Each structure stands twice: as structure tokens, then as C-alpha cells.
Image (tube, rainbow, N blue to C red):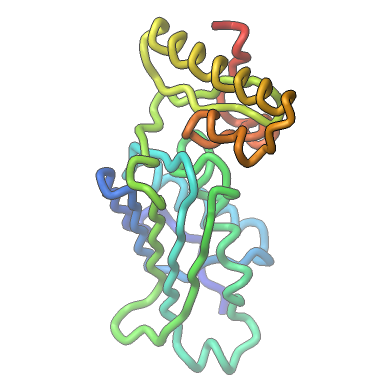
Length: 217
């Protein structure tokens, strides 16, 4: 029998800002990428709402994800309706990504460890997102981006206009130096060392975010 549509109360979300970590505990099964639309949307909306309310930060660089799914061995081995591990991460990642989530884009996932085990007293799943460096988890309120090219947009934190202008000037200088080095025949791996430490995002992956062209600053 199919599980009912998930509710926000099925998810317990905890944020550890200083550690660059977010833990999610669910009392319902993860949803399959192939699940019918009402159940999948219901699961994602409930998870997204729980994450938005319980967190205030966003991962800005690479992220590790670890999932443990608690499922009865008989369900896992002897039924055909249970989801496969390789089909359950995408709906979760989509739910926690975007301006109200904890990731800018799901291509930030650098590694995934997913497993299942027999539940004992537990059901559902436990999921941890962890930044590779703890300072790559910053407040998401007011977060926007400054665009230098279609493939190079950088984070612009919320700050006074004068501070943002100073950040953009620094970005602009670093990007210009990078291009100059490339024009002189310096290999890209070396020239990249002068670019901002924050990772760039392509404009096409930021459709839900505010993106400002650098010439506006």
C-alpha cells in the first residue's frame, strides 16, 4: 500500500550553523523519482517548508550528503513497490534547493553516501548535509548574485550598498586579471588562482535568485 502524502510534521530539521551542517530526520519513507506527481509534490513541499522554517543558512560551495533509510528487510527484498536507492536522492535535493532552501543548486553535491538498514524501533530516514568547509555555510537572507558572464556569477551577500560595491570591485579586478593571464598564454589551472575563493555559478542555474550585472555597481 502506498504511503500517504507527507506533511511538514514528518520532518525534524536541525541546523548547526557553526559546523556547516544540516540534519533531517523523517518519519516517512523517501519518495521515488518515479512516484506519482501528487505524492512526490506533497513530499517535496512538506520537506521544503520544514527546511525553510528550521534553517537560516545556505551552502555556498561543495556539499556531502549522507542518507540512511530505515526499511524492513522484507519490504526491501520481497516487494516491487519499494523505491531504489538511486531514485530517492533527486526529489530530496530538489526540495532543499533554491532561495528558501539550503543549497543554491544541486550540482553542489560533491559526494553522496546512501544506504538502508532494518529499522528496529525507527522508520523513515536520516539525512545529513555537510559543507566541506564550515565557513561555506552562510546566512541566506538577502543573498543575491553578481554576473560577470553567463558562466560566472558570484555570491553577493546582503550588506550596505557601499559594501556590495566594494565586493563587486574586487571581483571585477580578479576576473580582469584572470582574463589577462589567459590572454598571455598562462594555463587555466594557474590563472584560476587569482579568481575569488567563492565558487562561480552559471547564470542558467540561478533562475530563482536575484542576479545583478556587475555594471550596475
